[in-house]
Amino acid sequence: MNNILIIGTVDTKSDEINYMKNCIIDLKCNPILMDVSVLGDPPIKVDFTKHDVAKFADMTNQQIIDLGNENDAMIASAKGAKKLTKKLCEEKKIDGVIALGGTMGTDLALDVFYDLPLGFPKCLLSTIAGSPLIEPERLPSDIITILWAGGLYGLNSICKSSLSQACGAIVGATKSLYKNLNEKPIVAITSLGTSALKYIITLLPELEKRGFEAAVFHTTGMGGSAMESLIKQGKIAAVMDFSLVEISNFYFGSEVNSGELRLEVAGKYKIPQIVAPGGLTVVDAKTWSNPPKNFEGRDFRPHNRLITCAALTPSERKKAATIIGNKLIKSQGPTAFVMPHGGFDDWDREGEWAFDREAINSFYNEIKSILKDPIQFYEIKQNINDPEFTDIVLSIFDEWVQNGFIK
Image (cartoon, rainbow, N blue to C red; front, side):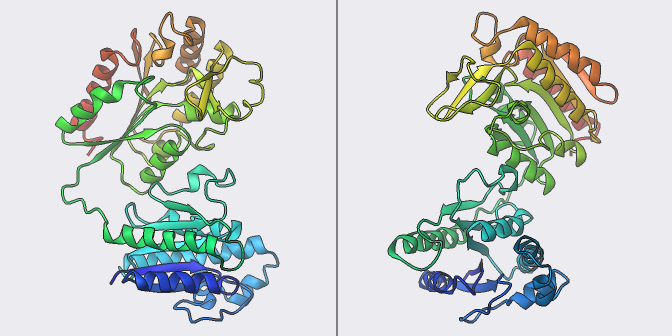
């Protein structure tokens, strides 16, 4: 029987947690309860008490109470729950973890989940699942999230549906866990869809020939965060970061971003990275909402009913170059930048709606002035989607493999 860790504030959510416990038993797994309450005592038996959690935070429960406010108390409890859960995972005493909560429980759960290994089943049952309150960079790349509808307080038929489905999801995840028996080093590649960026069509089979596995991350806010969380976990051998629109989106006020630290993680962790300005022709926005501030009145072109985009001006591409250059120059590992003078995506070809020669030149002049040795700087006359781009990328990659930069 697989062991499923349930994390929650058992003092206030004992009915819900007890219901989940019984669901997991019915699904032929063994529930283990961790209480992350601070003030109250649980009316049901738990396996790890609030005092156990406090101990793993190097505190007592009373010391957590004495912090004097719920935010500091939650942060302390999260520290203890995180260390305790990680220990249980490393000792193979649990096969999966599920946490439930509102904003407080969700905040704590995201801390607990963040350092758990890729592929270790983790499920978040939250009243704010999918909410803009959750920073994309805090979400593990393999998390299961389920909206806890009607579940803020007390059991009812609506929230029972969410609870039972979440239990089924985590149990199913533990029973269908993928086991990679022929692990290859992973190259992370960022991209948009092939209507804009097509280099992945060539790169994937070429990397496969070289004994690597390629994982492509969709740079629409969640993708960059997922990739960089895997870099921190040591899962990525090299990065081909060719779609940087999440970065410019952040600085131009779009919600379609991966946070302030995007494009800094690979360099900090000394992971070899080849970078190019794919997608830096536009700012993204929600089709169904207001455009970012300062982009009102701009001509937006809907990609679908979820996402729309507007072309960047020369000054905006220059600003993007400043931001990207200043991030890359801090890299502590092998870094190369490829400048495609023929455009940054298929919308940026001569005659297409986002093409702007002045904007391309503005970006180039700025980034060239920032990137110095040891950053390697390459230029091609063609578009990022042309064969010359993948040719030069693969030549850099092969050289780095030969020199031992990429293992």
